[in-house]
Amino acid sequence: MTGEATYRAARMVSAGVQEHFEAQLNEARQKGEERLAQAPSKQTIETMIDRAFWASLRREEGYSPKISLAYLPPEEASMPLLLEERLPFSSYTLTKMAPGVERPGIHLGVWEEEGQLYIWGSTQNLPNFCFVLDVSEPGLLVVKYRRKQGFGKFSNVAVLIGDQVKMVDQSSARLPDCMSLLTSLLSSDSATEDDSVNVLVQLAVSMRRHAHGGSLLIVPADTYAWHDSIIHPIRYAVKPAYTGLAELLQSQVEFGSQSLWKEALRKEVDNLAGLTAIDGATIINDRYELLAFGTKIARRKGGAPVEKILTTEPVIGGVAAVVSSALNGGTRHLSAAQFVHDQRNALALVASQDGRFTIFTWSACEDMVQAHQIDALLL
Image (cartoon, rainbow, N blue to C red; front, side):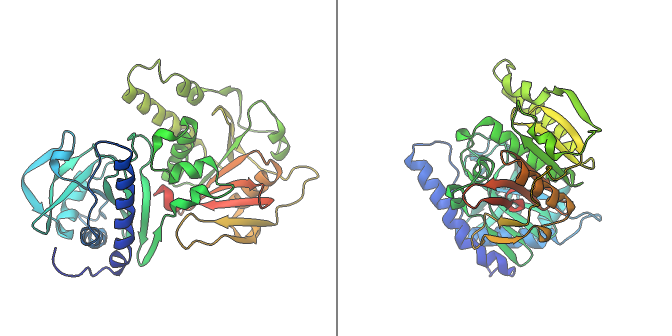
């Protein structure tokens, strides 16, 4: 790996990313965990980000590359697809190979020998804490790693958008009022997560993926208080409540095959998240039973309008700020904030068409609605 990276952000972020992976792996070794990946060096990280960035700006037959790179030797991959001759790790090679490996779950294997990176093939199975670099769209790269159990979303470490760098702040999970969904996204260990929280993560990812924008309200079960914050009649009320996702969560043991259960769960999550693309809010309870969709939110009778919102973003250097509710997004965001202001045991997930994703909760510590901007965690 000769020559300095020409993408300035690669030089800016490489040291912090390298320290993060070293710390995660050292902690895992101390716990006696097995099948751990090897941490890349600062130079390796800088080179991979640099070449991937320039590849993201190229086009192959009119399409921009979407590709996932994993740093590991072929012998540490399970059932790898091996090339007879290794390929040079260059932006040209990445652009040429991207159309064949752009589907989710496929990673190009990258390793090095005598200071030179090369591509050895592809794999769908990675060791724990394996360094992964996703090229999501032109100029947008995400550094992440596989969670221990291999199910659910990868954990993000850094997001690079052109000349902008966002390093995820793992310590945000230890702050007061840090809800379980945010803790789950920041956690490196999906084995410690409650299954229902993991499903909320999957719902958030699926909502963002359909790119139509939408709102999902999660209300307590066995109460109808949320009716006071919805315009009636409810055009798309569901009665009895649809329990497909809830029943699937309870039938994991009975399902027999773990892989089949996970696939069925993904389909149910996508079906439910798809309803959020319909104009209006989708409502489920905390047992994941569907109650309504396409609903219109209104201020509760006698309730005060939401005026101020505490905004946070779990990235290093991110500063919490109290802003006017009118300045925190459009109508969809304002109505979700009002709903949580009136229904303080509820949770609102809001996806924008441009990829922004916000979770609204009630902060007992601050006595106001809190808006967690988490799009950097969902990429």
